[in-house]
Amino acid sequence: MSQGTGENAPQHEPDGTPLRRGWTTGACATAATRSALAALLGGQFEDPVTITLPGGQTPAFALAHEANGPGYAEAGIIKDAGDDPDVTHGALVLARIERAQAGAGISFHAGAGVGTVTRPGLPLPVGEPAINPVPRRMMTGVVEELAKAHGVAADFRITISVRGGEKLAEKTWNPRLGIIGGLSILGTTGIVVPYSCSAWIHSIHRGVDVARAMGLTHVVGSTGDTSEKAAMARLGLPLEAYLDMGDFAGGLLKYVRTHSVERLTIAGGFAKLTKLAQGALDLHSGRSTVDLHFLVEMLQELGAGGQSVEKVRAANTASEVLAIATEAGIALGDRVAQRAHEQAQAIVGQASRVDIIIVDRGGSIVGESG
Image (cartoon, rainbow, N blue to C red; front, top):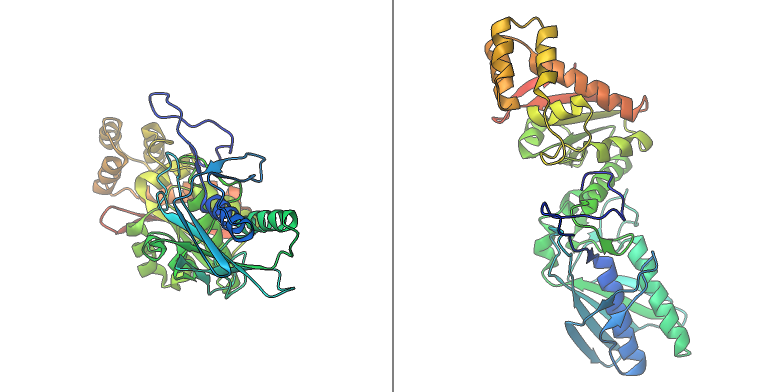
C-alpha cells in the first residue's frame, strides 16, 4: 500500500481480507451524465447505468437522484470510494444535461460544490470548471454515443455538481491550488485503489505545477503542519510555495526530477527524515521504520562517547535518540539532514537544488543540511 504500488496490485487488510475498490468522482459524473442524457433523449433514466472505464471495465451504478423538466434532465449517484478513506466518499455527484444551440458542441460547467480554476499551472485553463481532462473525455464519449444512437447532434451543456462540495473542498488542497468554490472532478482510471493515496500524490504534483506557473523558483514539501509552520517562519515564501507532502517524499522528489524548480526544501520531523536519510521514499510508520543502528553509526562518526552510544542502543524511539544526542551536545539533526539531502538530491538530479530542514515536535528547527 506504499507510494509506487501498482494500480493492479491487490490491497488487503492486516488479516488478509481484500480491500474493496471504489469509483472516482469522474466515473460517477460520467454515469450520471449517461443516465441523464438517456432520459433527455429517450424519456427514461438508465438505472442501473453502465459505463466503460478507460481500462475497459464496465461498472454499473444505481441512481440516487433523478429529475427532469423542459430541456433538461438531471441524475445523481452517491460516490462509493470502497475501503479508501476518501473525503468524497458518500457524496452525491449530480449531472444536469441541457440542450444547447445547434453547433455549440459539448460544454462543461461547474454547479454547486464543484470548483473553478483561478490560477495557471493546472491541466485546465483559468476560468474553467475543475473537471479534469479524463472525466471530460469519458463524459464526451457517452454523450457522443447516445447522441449518435438517437440521430441528433452532440450539442449539450453538462453541469456537474457535488452536494456539500464547498465544505468538503476545505479538507482538500483545492483552496491552495487556486480551485475556488468546491471540489475537483478527478480520476484517470475511474477506479479508486484503497490506500494508494493517488489523490494526495496528484495534489502534490499539481502544487508543483501551480508554483512553477506562478514563476516561483523555490518550493517546500512538508511532512505535516508543525514542520510547514517552521519552514514558513524560516523561509518567508508565498503560500503557494508550500506543499503538504505528507509521507510521500518519493511522490514529490520524482516529480521534481522531471518538473524542476531552482530550489526544493523538504521539512519534516526527525523520525520521518531519518527514514529519508536511510533511503525510504514512503515515510509512513506502517511502511518504513527508523533503523536505530543507522543512528548509532552516525553518532559514532560524530565522536559520541560510549555512554551516549549505549543510551541510544537502549532507546525506543527516534525522538529519544535525538534527545540523547542533544543532551550530549552532538549535532545529530544536522548529520541526518545532510544524509537526507544526499538521498533526495540523488533522486532529483542536478536540475534542482535540495535542502533539508528537520523540526522537533515543538516546532523548533533541530537540523539543516547546509
